[in-house]
Amino acid sequence: MKGIKYTGLVIFITGLAIFTALLFMGKYEVTSEIFDTFISNKGVKSELFINTFKEKIVGKTYTSQVQLSADIRSILETVNTTHETNQEWDKIIWGKSHNIAYDFIKPAGKGTVQDNKGIFWWLTFGLGIIGGLLFILPNVILLGPPGIKNDGIFLNSATNKGWIGILVFVYLVAFYLLLYFFPDLIVNWTYILDPISQSLSGGLASQWFVYGFLYCTIMTVMAVRMYIKYRHNRYQIVRTTSVLFFQIGFAFLIPEILVRFNQPYYDFKNAFPLDYDFFFDWNINILINSGGLGVFMLVWGIVLTLVIVPVMVYFFGKRWYCSWVCGCGGLAETLGDPYRQLSDKRLVAWKLERWLIHGVLVFSLVMTAATLYSFFTEADTVLGIKTQNIQYWYGLLIGSWFSGVIGTGFYPILGNRTWCRFGCPLAAYLGLVQRFKSRFRITTNGGQCISCGNCSTYCEQGIDVRAYAQKGENIVRSSCVGCGICSAVCPRGVLKLENGPETGRINPTEVLLGNDVDLMNFVNKK
Image 1 (cartoon, rainbow, N blue to C red):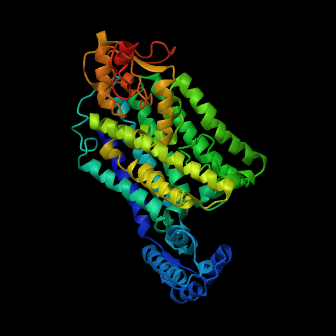
Image 2 (cartoon, helix red, strand yellow):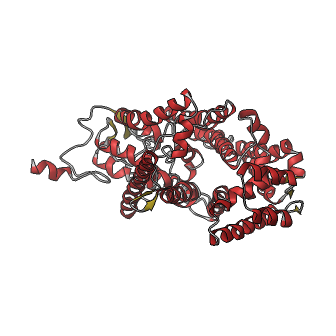
Image 3 (cartoon, rainbow, N blue to C red):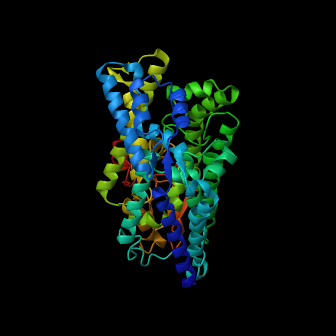
């Protein structure tokens, strides 16, 4: 069995190495046709840009998209600076430089990768999937009887911030930096997925299609690992199947198919404020102008946020979304499961968590209020601040850095729910409802607790579950996502996830921990 695992590991690493090597392959030439198409589509009026680009780039063959990207960005910066100085605002080339560079480089590629998309798909995604499954499947035999044992989890360099974990951390962060800020450098990844993208949406793959497909692939392979590891717990099997279904179906396939039928790209499960640009003017206009289905999407998004979300949290807690529906939670529970024990359990981490996650929620609400004010009044500024600047900084700091680079890239360093715990504004909203108006709780039986510490070790939200269990207190925390792992790893069945009457969730004679208030003082005052 170990031979199969090591073979799978070698195959997986080979696929990953080829996937990485694609970044340095191919040739690129911006032809006159590509350039003319860009000028026509963008409505470029800058003769300086046109003449400079034709002179320095058009017809020139590049062996590296890095150099081509650098030349394009250099020309953009020079041209835009000149027009700004001369106050020729209509001649400025608007847009992010990496997106403009991508528009040129994507159609300019030629060579081995372009001519052998299917082969390179198998050499990257194919080998990755096969290698991953070969590494995972023997665990059915090697793990022995079902159940989780807290032995050696902090002795493995892959799961204890050791050298393997550091390498994974570096690779994940580098991937997200390329995805968000240098998409023009990963066009070869898009080429190998062009056939799949064309079959779904009718268009060529973008960096976001690459991300969505890779997201679903990783979740599927790692879901197999979850099925094996938690095969003794039906709740975990059903929950894993649920997040997999919603990610592949609602977050990936349905939006792509909608585009094929000239409808807005829309994820029906993505609720505001996690979907922070839902109320941006461009999104509202697209939905309104898309006919009946677009208007339904707009109404659905509002109803989902204001009605469905709080009602579902009342009956089932925030777990219904964070652990059963959300794609962020789905990736955290599959790809991030090996790192769940790295969540910080210290009091200082809990204090930081409260300030950060509620701060992001306030930031998103302020941004949305400014956005809606500008939409209805057609004003560009609110209290002297440009609405677009607020949107830009939220998108950069929260939408890119926090949720992507840090939220996922830091799995091997900070644990698998870093974004959900410290940054997700929807999790903050759900948590407030769960904490004060919900039927959900985790009940404990202190008399059965043997203080093994499994529950606290595996809690991805940094909750000291054992402290509750030893006192026999119900766990009612706004940060709890109801993943149920604490119950799954308990050898004595001390913990149980329940949806019951509101009365009895909190014992008013005891001081509760975490986000809870000192109810003892409240009772004494009464």
